[in-house]
Length: 307
Image 1 (tube, rainbow, N blue to C red):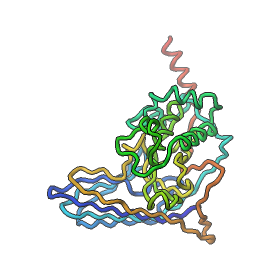
Image 2: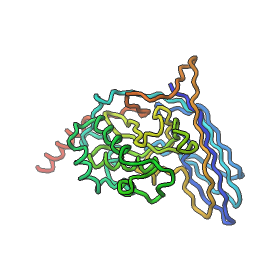
Image 3: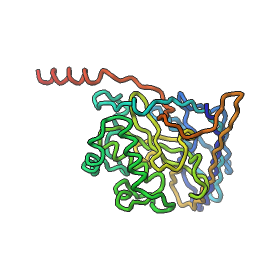
Image 4: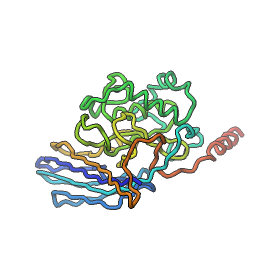
């Protein structure tokens, strides 16, 4: 088990008209990620609510704030139980056998233009045997080709932009890997958390973007930036790309201060809480999903259509 203590502090200066906010800073609740304790402090006496999306498990905090300073502090204790799998034995899933809720992660999206990267993906990875080893090859390729550089991109930077500029931050690495996976018919999604284990030379602790790829019957974790330790990732949100899971979406005239983020592992042998570390296995904090009948059903529908 991994036990993480998280804290996120946000500050905004709001003009006289007030502003609406949607935050994605609450740790997700999954079968393998349990939020045992959490708190939220809001500086203004405003109403707020947290809504959990049934299809993704994303927890969105909504509020309308008045003029002046708005400060938030979210803290949580989260336990992670990782499913581990040897990469060499982890297979890709044929499109016809994918669960229905996975299909949406095959398509191009705003920041992941997989339809523009098909030729490159086939040239670089099409000759490799399908499976987790091919996905790892994509992650390593992105890490070799792109240089991590703070403030080198903006909210409009897409996977193709990153490929051209060859620099980016974690979200850019994630977008490019996702686009290349989807170009090979491998479902991949954008995931947010915190950058546990990142080199302090890259800057203070921050939010982090990484990738989850659907292999076998689960979503598995990959960090194409190579800057952090995946075993210490606590999931906030998952989506097609960054547009689905921004940590803050703001409607109004607001001055934003840099977030203050921290994530610390609690090591306690008495309860089996370990220090997050790099490991050779592929990790997942997602529950297995049923597959297997779609190919047959699809073939039957084709015969019926022909009749």
